[in-house]
Length: 217
Image (cartoon, rainbow, N blue to C red):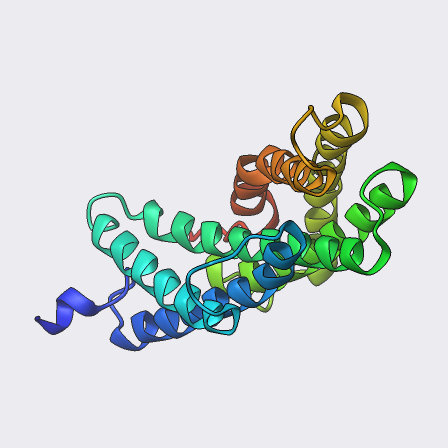
């Protein structure tokens, strides 16, 4: 394969290698935080749970490599793929912490569930800021930190509100249908919450929080 064929969207082989290493790290963490979810839901995989982080790390790198190939025609796909991988990690942190708290306490609904959900979402948001700032959007380090962080908080306050509200409606208003366990339904509620914030956060980050300054030629 020619050197230009394995370079990143900015043309640098080192940049592409860095992206692949980060994809491995993100995928590994995704698998690690997924373990308490699987344990809580009683899902048995055909592979040992301890191998899951290594498997998801490999899948993460493969997915980013595939996005890199498509990005030759649509460059923004590569950035969206990085955002999606960070989003998957955010969700695994959210779900992993939520399910860990459910495992420890046995609480799956009510005010305590909302407190658990709020805490898990908040930690996912902090993770989102770090990875999206320095990897997905590669925001300049010299920009106004206060403005950027304020914009980030604004976008995520809206996102967290949508996330928790959607989870609340599914878990506490609709309630688990007959035949579906409350633990599974709590996670379904979390999925709905995460879905509400995917595209709002991407466009909010790209065009409002981490937007790059215009270059005057």
